[in-house]
Amino acid sequence: MKEGKEIVADPIFSKIGLAADRLGVDSYVIGGYVRDAILGRDCKDIDVVCIGSGIDLALEVAKEFDLPEHAVSVFKNFGTAMIKVDDWDLEFVGARKESYNRDSRKPVVEEGTLEDDQNRRDFTINAMAVQLNKVNWGKLLDPFNGLDDLKAKIIRTPLAPGITFSDDPLRMMRAVRFAAQLGFDILPETFEALKTEKDRLSIISMERISDELNKMILCKKPSYGFLLLDACEILPIIFPEFMKLKGVDTEDGKGHKDNFYHTLQVLDNIAENTDDLWWRWAAILHDIAKPQTKRFAQGKGWTFHGHEEMGARQVPNIFKRLKLPLNEKMKLVQKLVRLHLRPIALSKEEITASALRRLLFEAGEELEALMTLCRADITSKNGDKVKRYLRNFDIVEQKLKEVEESDSLRNFQPVFSGEIIMQVFDIGPGREIGLIKIAMREAVLEGIIRNELASGWDLLIEEGRKLDLKPVVSLAEIQ
Image 1: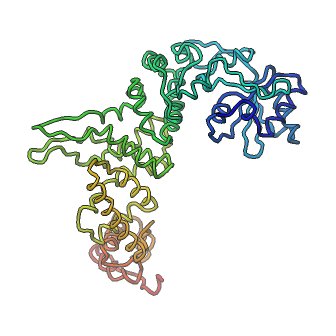
Image 2 (image 1 turned 90 degrees about the vertical axis):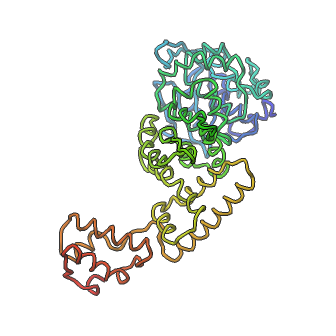
Image 3 (image 1 turned 60 degrees about the vertical axis):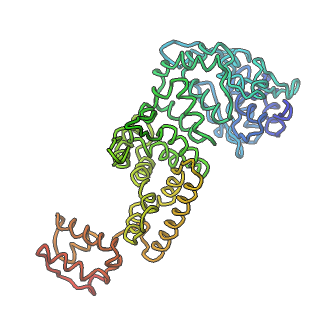
Protein backbone atom coordinates (compact mmCIF):
# COMPACT_ATOMS: atom_id res chain seq x y z
CA MET A 1 0.00 0.00 0.00
CA LYS A 2 1.14 3.55 -0.77
CA GLU A 3 2.69 5.81 1.86
CA GLY A 4 1.65 9.43 2.41
CA LYS A 5 4.18 11.01 0.04
CA GLU A 6 3.36 8.47 -2.67
CA ILE A 7 -0.32 9.41 -2.40
CA VAL A 8 0.42 13.05 -3.27
CA ALA A 9 3.19 12.39 -5.79
CA ASP A 10 1.27 13.92 -8.71
CA PRO A 11 2.41 17.53 -9.45
CA ILE A 12 -1.14 18.79 -8.99
CA PHE A 13 -0.77 18.39 -5.22
CA SER A 14 2.40 20.47 -5.17
CA LYS A 15 0.52 23.36 -6.80
CA ILE A 16 -2.29 23.09 -4.26
CA GLY A 17 0.29 23.09 -1.44
CA LEU A 18 2.06 26.17 -2.86
CA ALA A 19 -1.22 28.07 -3.03
CA ALA A 20 -2.06 27.08 0.55
CA ASP A 21 1.35 28.20 1.80
CA ARG A 22 0.92 31.60 0.11
CA LEU A 23 -2.36 32.05 1.97
CA GLY A 24 -0.85 30.73 5.18
CA VAL A 25 -3.50 28.00 5.65
CA ASP A 26 -3.06 24.31 6.40
CA SER A 27 -4.43 22.15 3.59
CA TYR A 28 -5.04 18.42 3.20
CA VAL A 29 -6.30 16.01 0.59
CA ILE A 30 -8.87 13.91 2.38
CA GLY A 31 -11.39 11.12 1.93
CA GLY A 32 -11.99 9.09 -1.19
CA TYR A 33 -8.85 10.03 -3.10
CA VAL A 34 -6.62 9.02 -0.19
CA ARG A 35 -8.50 5.74 0.25
CA ASP A 36 -8.38 4.86 -3.44
CA ALA A 37 -4.74 5.86 -3.85
CA ILE A 38 -3.76 3.54 -1.01
CA LEU A 39 -5.79 0.72 -2.58
CA GLY A 40 -4.32 1.39 -6.03
CA ARG A 41 -7.71 2.35 -7.47
CA ASP A 42 -7.97 5.05 -10.11
CA CYS A 43 -9.58 8.25 -8.84
CA LYS A 44 -9.75 11.71 -10.42
CA ASP A 45 -11.86 13.39 -7.71
CA ILE A 46 -9.76 15.31 -5.20
CA ASP A 47 -11.33 16.66 -2.01
CA VAL A 48 -9.21 19.32 -0.32
CA VAL A 49 -10.00 20.57 3.19
CA CYS A 50 -8.22 23.58 4.68
CA ILE A 51 -8.24 25.36 8.00
CA GLY A 52 -9.82 28.53 6.66
CA SER A 53 -11.79 29.45 3.57
CA GLY A 54 -12.05 26.73 0.94
CA ILE A 55 -13.30 29.30 -1.56
CA ASP A 56 -10.23 31.52 -1.07
CA LEU A 57 -7.95 28.50 -1.47
CA ALA A 58 -9.71 27.47 -4.69
CA LEU A 59 -9.25 30.96 -6.15
CA GLU A 60 -5.55 30.88 -5.21
CA VAL A 61 -5.10 27.40 -6.71
CA ALA A 62 -6.69 28.63 -9.95
CA LYS A 63 -3.84 31.15 -10.24
CA GLU A 64 -1.33 28.27 -10.06
CA PHE A 65 -2.90 26.83 -13.22
CA ASP A 66 -3.29 30.24 -14.93
CA LEU A 67 -7.06 29.83 -14.82
CA PRO A 68 -9.37 32.86 -14.80
CA GLU A 69 -11.46 33.50 -11.72
CA HIS A 70 -14.66 32.47 -13.53
CA ALA A 71 -13.18 28.96 -13.96
CA VAL A 72 -13.85 28.47 -10.25
CA SER A 73 -17.39 27.33 -9.42
CA VAL A 74 -18.27 28.88 -6.07
CA PHE A 75 -21.08 27.67 -3.80
CA LYS A 76 -21.21 30.27 -1.05
CA ASN A 77 -24.13 28.67 0.79
CA PHE A 78 -22.04 25.54 1.32
CA GLY A 79 -18.66 27.25 1.61
CA THR A 80 -17.27 25.11 -1.20
CA ALA A 81 -15.65 25.71 -4.58
CA MET A 82 -14.77 23.47 -7.50
CA ILE A 83 -12.17 23.58 -10.26
CA LYS A 84 -11.74 21.36 -13.30
CA VAL A 85 -8.06 20.88 -14.22
CA ASP A 86 -7.49 18.56 -17.19
CA ASP A 87 -9.23 15.35 -16.13
CA TRP A 88 -9.09 16.19 -12.42
CA ASP A 89 -12.11 17.42 -10.43
CA LEU A 90 -10.98 19.44 -7.41
CA GLU A 91 -13.33 20.42 -4.59
CA PHE A 92 -12.27 22.77 -1.78
CA VAL A 93 -13.93 23.30 1.59
CA GLY A 94 -12.98 24.73 4.94
CA ALA A 95 -12.71 22.31 7.86
CA ARG A 96 -15.98 22.15 9.74
CA LYS A 97 -17.87 20.47 12.51
CA GLU A 98 -21.48 19.44 12.31
CA SER A 99 -24.43 18.96 14.63
CA TYR A 100 -27.70 17.34 13.61
CA ASN A 101 -31.40 17.82 14.26
CA ARG A 102 -33.05 14.41 14.56
CA ASP A 103 -35.66 15.24 11.93
CA SER A 104 -33.16 16.15 9.20
CA ARG A 105 -29.92 14.89 7.72
CA LYS A 106 -28.90 18.49 6.97
CA PRO A 107 -26.45 19.49 9.69
CA VAL A 108 -25.81 22.79 11.40
CA VAL A 109 -22.29 23.61 10.18
CA GLU A 110 -19.61 25.59 12.00
CA GLU A 111 -15.97 26.27 11.28
CA GLY A 112 -13.78 23.63 12.85
CA THR A 113 -10.42 21.96 13.09
CA LEU A 114 -9.08 19.10 11.00
CA GLU A 115 -9.98 16.82 13.91
CA ASP A 116 -13.57 18.10 13.80
CA ASP A 117 -13.68 17.47 10.07
CA GLN A 118 -12.36 13.93 10.39
CA ASN A 119 -14.83 13.20 13.21
CA ARG A 120 -17.76 14.01 10.90
CA ARG A 121 -16.62 11.56 8.19
CA ASP A 122 -18.73 8.48 7.56
CA PHE A 123 -16.11 5.71 7.78
CA THR A 124 -12.56 5.34 9.03
CA ILE A 125 -11.32 4.55 5.54
CA ASN A 126 -12.73 7.90 4.36
CA ALA A 127 -11.34 9.95 7.26
CA MET A 128 -7.64 9.75 6.34
CA ALA A 129 -5.92 12.97 5.26
CA VAL A 130 -2.53 13.81 3.77
CA GLN A 131 -1.05 17.26 4.39
CA LEU A 132 -0.05 19.36 1.37
CA ASN A 133 1.88 22.19 3.05
CA LYS A 134 5.62 22.18 2.54
CA VAL A 135 6.40 21.94 6.26
CA ASN A 136 4.60 18.60 6.64
CA TRP A 137 4.40 17.52 3.03
CA GLY A 138 2.96 14.01 2.62
CA LYS A 139 2.20 13.45 6.30
CA LEU A 140 -0.66 10.94 6.72
CA LEU A 141 -3.12 11.85 9.46
CA ASP A 142 -5.13 8.78 10.39
CA PRO A 143 -6.74 9.25 13.82
CA PHE A 144 -9.16 6.31 13.47
CA ASN A 145 -6.73 3.73 12.07
CA GLY A 146 -8.35 3.74 8.64
CA LEU A 147 -5.16 2.33 7.16
CA ASP A 148 -5.49 -0.75 9.37
CA ASP A 149 -9.15 -1.10 8.34
CA LEU A 150 -8.14 -0.93 4.68
CA LYS A 151 -5.64 -3.72 5.25
CA ALA A 152 -8.25 -5.76 7.18
CA LYS A 153 -10.94 -4.93 4.58
CA ILE A 154 -13.32 -3.58 7.19
CA ILE A 155 -16.04 -0.91 7.05
CA ARG A 156 -16.20 0.86 10.41
CA THR A 157 -17.48 4.25 11.57
CA PRO A 158 -15.10 6.73 13.24
CA LEU A 159 -17.49 7.42 16.11
CA ALA A 160 -20.18 5.21 17.68
CA PRO A 161 -22.07 3.74 14.70
CA GLY A 162 -25.50 4.41 16.18
CA ILE A 163 -24.68 8.13 16.33
CA THR A 164 -23.09 8.18 12.87
CA PHE A 165 -26.09 6.50 11.22
CA SER A 166 -28.75 8.34 13.19
CA ASP A 167 -27.18 11.70 12.33
CA ASP A 168 -27.11 10.94 8.60
CA PRO A 169 -29.03 7.74 7.76
CA LEU A 170 -27.80 7.81 4.15
CA ARG A 171 -24.51 6.56 5.59
CA MET A 172 -26.21 3.19 6.08
CA MET A 173 -26.66 2.86 2.33
CA ARG A 174 -23.10 4.07 1.84
CA ALA A 175 -21.79 1.43 4.25
CA VAL A 176 -23.33 -1.32 2.16
CA ARG A 177 -22.28 0.33 -1.10
CA PHE A 178 -18.62 0.64 -0.03
CA ALA A 179 -18.61 -2.94 1.23
CA ALA A 180 -19.95 -4.08 -2.14
CA GLN A 181 -17.60 -1.90 -4.20
CA LEU A 182 -14.49 -2.85 -2.27
CA GLY A 183 -15.40 -6.41 -1.31
CA PHE A 184 -15.05 -5.49 2.39
CA ASP A 185 -16.83 -6.79 5.49
CA ILE A 186 -18.83 -4.53 7.78
CA LEU A 187 -17.62 -4.62 11.38
CA PRO A 188 -20.19 -6.52 13.51
CA GLU A 189 -20.85 -3.54 15.79
CA THR A 190 -21.35 -1.31 12.74
CA PHE A 191 -23.58 -3.92 11.10
CA GLU A 192 -25.79 -4.20 14.17
CA ALA A 193 -26.26 -0.43 14.09
CA LEU A 194 -27.56 -0.76 10.51
CA LYS A 195 -30.36 -2.96 11.84
CA THR A 196 -31.01 -0.76 14.85
CA GLU A 197 -31.15 2.52 12.92
CA LYS A 198 -32.74 1.27 9.67
CA ASP A 199 -36.04 3.08 10.25
CA ARG A 200 -34.16 6.39 10.21
CA LEU A 201 -33.99 6.01 6.43
CA SER A 202 -37.50 7.48 6.38
CA ILE A 203 -35.99 10.99 6.47
CA ILE A 204 -33.87 10.32 3.38
CA SER A 205 -35.22 11.15 -0.08
CA MET A 206 -35.73 8.21 -2.41
CA GLU A 207 -33.50 9.94 -4.98
CA ARG A 208 -30.53 9.72 -2.60
CA ILE A 209 -31.30 6.12 -1.66
CA SER A 210 -31.61 5.08 -5.31
CA ASP A 211 -28.37 6.84 -6.18
CA GLU A 212 -26.54 4.66 -3.66
CA LEU A 213 -28.48 1.60 -4.83
CA ASN A 214 -27.43 2.25 -8.44
CA LYS A 215 -23.78 2.56 -7.43
CA MET A 216 -24.12 -0.77 -5.65
CA ILE A 217 -25.75 -2.36 -8.71
CA LEU A 218 -22.77 -1.23 -10.80
CA CYS A 219 -20.34 -3.14 -8.56
CA LYS A 220 -18.38 -6.08 -9.94
CA LYS A 221 -20.50 -8.50 -7.84
CA PRO A 222 -23.70 -6.62 -7.06
CA SER A 223 -25.40 -9.55 -5.33
CA TYR A 224 -23.16 -8.99 -2.30
CA GLY A 225 -24.73 -5.60 -1.66
CA PHE A 226 -28.26 -7.00 -1.95
CA LEU A 227 -27.43 -9.81 0.47
CA LEU A 228 -26.07 -7.27 2.97
CA LEU A 229 -29.19 -5.10 2.60
CA ASP A 230 -31.32 -8.18 3.19
CA ALA A 231 -29.30 -9.29 6.22
CA CYS A 232 -29.49 -5.88 7.91
CA GLU A 233 -33.24 -5.64 7.15
CA ILE A 234 -32.97 -2.51 4.98
CA LEU A 235 -33.99 -4.17 1.71
CA PRO A 236 -37.67 -4.62 2.70
CA ILE A 237 -37.82 -0.89 3.48
CA ILE A 238 -36.39 0.39 0.21
CA PHE A 239 -37.34 -2.39 -2.24
CA PRO A 240 -40.28 -4.44 -0.93
CA GLU A 241 -41.16 -5.74 -4.41
CA PHE A 242 -37.83 -7.53 -4.60
CA MET A 243 -38.29 -9.16 -1.20
CA LYS A 244 -41.48 -10.87 -2.42
CA LEU A 245 -39.28 -13.07 -4.64
CA LYS A 246 -37.80 -14.71 -1.56
CA GLY A 247 -38.84 -18.16 -0.39
CA VAL A 248 -39.90 -21.52 -1.81
CA ASP A 249 -43.39 -23.03 -1.72
CA THR A 250 -43.88 -26.79 -1.76
CA GLU A 251 -46.94 -28.68 -3.00
CA ASP A 252 -47.21 -32.46 -3.35
CA GLY A 253 -43.51 -32.66 -2.60
CA LYS A 254 -42.65 -30.30 -5.47
CA GLY A 255 -40.87 -27.02 -4.90
CA HIS A 256 -39.50 -24.33 -7.19
CA LYS A 257 -36.28 -22.38 -7.21
CA ASP A 258 -35.98 -19.43 -4.86
CA ASN A 259 -36.44 -16.54 -7.27
CA PHE A 260 -34.68 -14.09 -4.94
CA TYR A 261 -31.37 -15.95 -5.12
CA HIS A 262 -31.93 -16.87 -8.76
CA THR A 263 -32.34 -13.18 -9.62
CA LEU A 264 -29.15 -12.28 -7.75
CA GLN A 265 -27.30 -14.93 -9.74
CA VAL A 266 -28.71 -13.53 -12.99
CA LEU A 267 -27.59 -10.06 -11.88
CA ASP A 268 -24.05 -11.29 -11.19
CA ASN A 269 -24.04 -13.14 -14.51
CA ILE A 270 -25.04 -10.11 -16.55
CA ALA A 271 -22.57 -7.95 -14.58
CA GLU A 272 -19.77 -10.08 -16.02
CA ASN A 273 -20.75 -8.96 -19.52
CA THR A 274 -21.96 -5.37 -19.24
CA ASP A 275 -21.52 -2.22 -17.17
CA ASP A 276 -24.81 -0.85 -18.46
CA LEU A 277 -26.91 0.06 -15.41
CA TRP A 278 -30.22 -0.47 -17.19
CA TRP A 279 -29.32 -3.91 -18.53
CA ARG A 280 -28.56 -4.77 -14.92
CA TRP A 281 -31.90 -3.34 -13.79
CA ALA A 282 -33.58 -5.57 -16.37
CA ALA A 283 -31.88 -8.56 -14.72
CA ILE A 284 -33.18 -7.41 -11.32
CA LEU A 285 -36.75 -7.05 -12.57
CA HIS A 286 -37.00 -9.84 -15.14
CA ASP A 287 -38.89 -12.18 -12.76
CA ILE A 288 -40.40 -9.50 -10.51
CA ALA A 289 -43.99 -10.67 -11.18
CA LYS A 290 -43.41 -14.33 -10.41
CA PRO A 291 -44.93 -14.07 -6.90
CA GLN A 292 -48.21 -12.78 -8.36
CA THR A 293 -48.35 -15.36 -11.17
CA LYS A 294 -47.26 -18.42 -9.17
CA ARG A 295 -49.68 -21.34 -9.52
CA PHE A 296 -49.47 -25.06 -8.81
CA ALA A 297 -50.89 -27.31 -11.52
CA GLN A 298 -51.47 -30.98 -10.76
CA GLY A 299 -49.20 -33.12 -12.89
CA LYS A 300 -47.18 -30.12 -14.06
CA GLY A 301 -45.84 -28.50 -10.92
CA TRP A 302 -45.31 -24.79 -10.38
CA THR A 303 -46.05 -22.35 -13.20
CA PHE A 304 -45.57 -18.59 -13.62
CA HIS A 305 -47.60 -17.99 -16.75
CA GLY A 306 -47.60 -14.39 -17.93
CA HIS A 307 -45.03 -13.18 -15.44
CA GLU A 308 -43.06 -11.47 -18.20
CA GLU A 309 -46.05 -9.36 -19.32
CA MET A 310 -47.19 -8.56 -15.78
CA GLY A 311 -43.60 -7.74 -14.83
CA ALA A 312 -43.30 -5.33 -17.77
CA ARG A 313 -46.46 -3.57 -16.60
CA GLN A 314 -44.98 -3.21 -13.10
CA VAL A 315 -41.74 -1.61 -14.27
CA PRO A 316 -43.08 1.99 -14.58
CA ASN A 317 -44.55 1.93 -11.06
CA ILE A 318 -41.35 0.54 -9.57
CA PHE A 319 -39.25 3.14 -11.39
CA LYS A 320 -41.63 5.88 -10.28
CA ARG A 321 -41.48 4.83 -6.63
CA LEU A 322 -37.69 4.53 -6.69
CA LYS A 323 -37.42 7.91 -8.46
CA LEU A 324 -35.61 6.31 -11.39
CA PRO A 325 -35.95 7.93 -14.83
CA LEU A 326 -39.28 7.42 -16.58
CA ASN A 327 -37.79 7.96 -20.02
CA GLU A 328 -36.23 5.67 -22.62
CA LYS A 329 -34.18 3.97 -19.87
CA MET A 330 -37.35 2.73 -18.22
CA LYS A 331 -38.78 1.70 -21.59
CA LEU A 332 -35.62 -0.31 -22.32
CA VAL A 333 -35.97 -2.20 -19.03
CA GLN A 334 -39.67 -2.71 -19.66
CA LYS A 335 -39.00 -4.15 -23.13
CA LEU A 336 -36.32 -6.53 -21.86
CA VAL A 337 -38.59 -7.78 -19.05
CA ARG A 338 -41.43 -8.31 -21.52
CA LEU A 339 -39.29 -10.20 -24.05
CA HIS A 340 -36.91 -12.12 -21.80
CA LEU A 341 -38.61 -15.50 -22.38
CA ARG A 342 -38.81 -15.21 -26.14
CA PRO A 343 -35.26 -16.29 -27.08
CA ILE A 344 -35.46 -19.06 -24.46
CA ALA A 345 -38.65 -20.38 -26.08
CA LEU A 346 -37.01 -20.21 -29.51
CA SER A 347 -34.04 -22.22 -28.25
CA LYS A 348 -36.34 -25.07 -27.15
CA GLU A 349 -38.40 -25.50 -30.29
CA GLU A 350 -38.07 -25.67 -34.04
CA ILE A 351 -37.10 -22.17 -35.08
CA THR A 352 -39.34 -20.67 -37.76
CA ALA A 353 -38.40 -17.68 -39.87
CA SER A 354 -41.64 -16.02 -38.78
CA ALA A 355 -40.74 -16.30 -35.07
CA LEU A 356 -37.29 -14.88 -35.80
CA ARG A 357 -38.73 -11.96 -37.74
CA ARG A 358 -41.11 -11.15 -34.91
CA LEU A 359 -38.34 -11.20 -32.34
CA LEU A 360 -36.18 -8.94 -34.51
CA PHE A 361 -39.10 -6.58 -35.01
CA GLU A 362 -40.00 -6.39 -31.32
CA ALA A 363 -36.45 -6.27 -29.90
CA GLY A 364 -35.09 -3.76 -32.41
CA GLU A 365 -31.93 -2.07 -31.15
CA GLU A 366 -32.22 -3.91 -27.84
CA LEU A 367 -31.56 -7.34 -29.36
CA GLU A 368 -28.00 -7.52 -27.97
CA ALA A 369 -29.21 -6.52 -24.51
CA LEU A 370 -31.99 -9.11 -24.70
CA MET A 371 -29.67 -11.94 -25.68
CA THR A 372 -27.20 -10.92 -22.97
CA LEU A 373 -30.00 -11.04 -20.39
CA CYS A 374 -31.19 -14.43 -21.64
CA ARG A 375 -27.72 -15.93 -21.37
CA ALA A 376 -27.41 -14.52 -17.85
CA ASP A 377 -30.76 -16.13 -16.99
CA ILE A 378 -29.24 -19.61 -17.27
CA THR A 379 -28.44 -20.43 -13.65
CA SER A 380 -28.71 -24.22 -13.58
CA LYS A 381 -26.13 -26.05 -11.46
CA ASN A 382 -26.12 -28.76 -14.13
CA GLY A 383 -23.10 -27.88 -16.27
CA ASP A 384 -24.23 -30.00 -19.21
CA LYS A 385 -27.63 -28.32 -19.18
CA VAL A 386 -26.01 -24.87 -19.20
CA LYS A 387 -23.78 -25.81 -22.13
CA ARG A 388 -26.78 -27.15 -24.05
CA TYR A 389 -28.76 -23.97 -23.51
CA LEU A 390 -25.82 -21.80 -24.54
CA ARG A 391 -25.32 -23.85 -27.72
CA ASN A 392 -29.00 -23.40 -28.52
CA PHE A 393 -28.67 -19.65 -28.00
CA ASP A 394 -25.71 -19.65 -30.40
CA ILE A 395 -27.97 -21.26 -33.02
CA VAL A 396 -30.76 -18.73 -32.36
CA GLU A 397 -28.32 -15.81 -32.66
CA GLN A 398 -26.90 -17.14 -35.93
CA LYS A 399 -30.37 -17.55 -37.41
CA LEU A 400 -31.36 -14.09 -36.22
CA LYS A 401 -28.29 -12.72 -37.98
CA GLU A 402 -29.22 -14.51 -41.21
CA VAL A 403 -32.82 -13.23 -41.14
CA GLU A 404 -31.65 -9.72 -40.30
CA GLU A 405 -29.25 -9.71 -43.22
CA SER A 406 -31.89 -10.92 -45.66
CA ASP A 407 -34.92 -8.96 -44.40
CA SER A 408 -33.43 -5.88 -42.69
CA LEU A 409 -35.95 -6.10 -39.88
CA ARG A 410 -33.95 -4.47 -37.09
CA ASN A 411 -35.73 -1.20 -36.36
CA PHE A 412 -38.36 -2.33 -38.84
CA GLN A 413 -40.36 0.62 -40.20
CA PRO A 414 -43.21 -0.62 -42.43
CA VAL A 415 -43.23 1.07 -45.84
CA PHE A 416 -47.01 0.80 -45.79
CA SER A 417 -47.46 3.71 -43.42
CA GLY A 418 -50.70 5.42 -42.54
CA GLU A 419 -49.81 8.27 -44.90
CA ILE A 420 -49.29 5.87 -47.83
CA ILE A 421 -52.57 4.06 -47.13
CA MET A 422 -54.53 7.33 -46.93
CA GLN A 423 -52.95 8.50 -50.19
CA VAL A 424 -53.69 5.25 -52.04
CA PHE A 425 -57.36 5.12 -51.04
CA ASP A 426 -57.94 8.88 -50.66
CA ILE A 427 -59.30 8.58 -47.11
CA GLY A 428 -58.66 10.33 -43.83
CA PRO A 429 -57.59 8.90 -40.46
CA GLY A 430 -59.81 6.11 -39.14
CA ARG A 431 -60.05 2.49 -38.03
CA GLU A 432 -59.52 1.28 -41.61
CA ILE A 433 -55.97 2.65 -41.55
CA GLY A 434 -55.12 0.66 -38.45
CA LEU A 435 -56.62 -2.56 -39.80
CA ILE A 436 -54.70 -2.34 -43.07
CA LYS A 437 -51.43 -1.46 -41.31
CA ILE A 438 -51.75 -4.51 -39.07
CA ALA A 439 -52.49 -6.78 -42.03
CA MET A 440 -49.50 -5.48 -43.98
CA ARG A 441 -47.17 -5.74 -40.99
CA GLU A 442 -48.26 -9.32 -40.30
CA ALA A 443 -47.69 -10.23 -43.94
CA VAL A 444 -44.13 -8.91 -43.74
CA LEU A 445 -43.43 -10.74 -40.47
CA GLU A 446 -44.88 -13.99 -41.86
CA GLY A 447 -42.67 -13.68 -44.94
CA ILE A 448 -45.64 -13.44 -47.33
CA ILE A 449 -44.33 -10.16 -48.73
CA ARG A 450 -41.15 -8.13 -48.39
CA ASN A 451 -41.16 -4.73 -46.74
CA GLU A 452 -41.27 -3.07 -50.17
CA LEU A 453 -44.05 -1.21 -52.01
CA ALA A 454 -43.85 -3.37 -55.14
CA SER A 455 -43.84 -6.64 -53.18
CA GLY A 456 -46.92 -5.75 -51.13
CA TRP A 457 -48.93 -3.66 -53.57
CA ASP A 458 -51.39 -6.36 -54.61
CA LEU A 459 -51.99 -7.33 -50.98
CA LEU A 460 -52.56 -3.68 -50.06
CA ILE A 461 -55.24 -3.34 -52.75
CA GLU A 462 -56.85 -6.62 -51.61
CA GLU A 463 -56.95 -5.51 -47.98
CA GLY A 464 -58.54 -2.24 -49.07
CA ARG A 465 -61.15 -4.11 -51.11
CA LYS A 466 -62.20 -6.05 -48.00
CA LEU A 467 -63.10 -2.69 -46.45
CA ASP A 468 -64.85 -1.41 -49.61
CA LEU A 469 -61.95 0.88 -50.42
CA LYS A 470 -60.73 1.52 -53.96
CA PRO A 471 -57.30 2.83 -54.98
CA VAL A 472 -57.18 6.25 -56.58
CA VAL A 473 -53.49 6.10 -57.56
CA SER A 474 -51.24 3.51 -59.14
CA LEU A 475 -48.06 1.94 -57.82
CA ALA A 476 -46.07 3.98 -60.33
CA GLU A 477 -47.58 7.23 -59.01
CA ILE A 478 -46.72 6.31 -55.40
CA GLN A 479 -43.15 5.36 -56.27
